[in-house]
Amino acid sequence: MSSDIANIILRVLAGNYSKGEDIKLKKWMNKDPDNLRKFEALRNYWSEQNHDISKEKILNNVKRRISEDKHQIQSKTLKKTDLIDDSNFWLKGVASIVMISIFSVYFFQTEINISDNTIPQKEIINKKNSYGQKSTIFLSDGSIIHLNSGSSVSYLKGFNNDKRQIELSGEAYFEVAKDINRPFTVIAHGVTTTALGTSFNVNTYSKNEVTVSLAEGKVQVEFDNEYNGFQDQYLVAGEQLAYNRDLRTIKKSLFNPKINAWKDGILFFENASQKEVFEALELWHGLSFSVSEPFDEEWRINASYDNQNLSSILTSLGYIQGFDFEILDKEVFIKNK
Image (tube, rainbow, N blue to C red; front, side):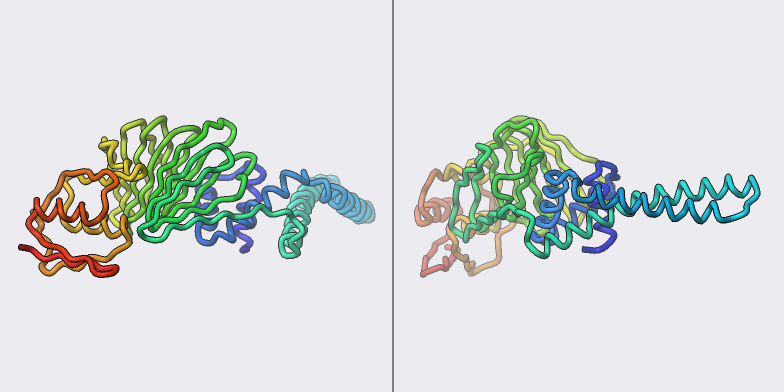
């Protein structure tokens, strides 16, 4: 842990930090799950111990230093003006000693305790779906995660006393249990979505885009990129936000609620291209598609399939769009008629 991050953590724990520092800390935590574990351990230790261990040491250090400095001042022959200046300097020095003692003692103890594993650390839960697999996760707070194919989430078991934080890769639909004292936060590829009690979908399948779709309630969306200058965004039910990291653009729009129907086994296409349809089917069924001819850019489909198998879906699409198909093991071959 660098001294810069350590100082930011101290300011965050003390409740005296800037938005830029908050962004920098979140980026550090997002880089490595172990960083998140360290921060949570530090915060739990800070809260539970309430600095009891450090207080006595700090007080003794300050008393000793005050005694030494007083002796040095009394042993000097000074002018009145010099004495006032030195006194001010001495007072500032004592204040600095107090601050340094608090920080150094706390961090010295915390770092040792972490390395010795003497701080009780909460377990990090990791859930991952392979391609073609979907799952439903019931959280301890009553919230529910519908995790899509080829997706993963990680979170602290039981969460913390002041927040519920999930890290997501892929796509998931969240039904959030209301808890005004613990906001529910989803971090996905630099985008942080926060809610108190609502239902929303987060999709990060695209390499350069994150999409947040709100079904119920209200959410706040933050962007973990200090260089783009975006302000926090707020969504109400029926709104969708798409953030393109490469182009650094934000697009808000209304959306068809059926796009979230995947959690109920319904595959929905709205003005979808051939490429988009086959990519969705690859994720949905865990297969790869091989197309004999280049994608037809004018090829568009509007359809929904309710818990139908792959063969039935392809038969329907092939009839509409004019292609034949063959499924061999884990690969689907598409040939235009």
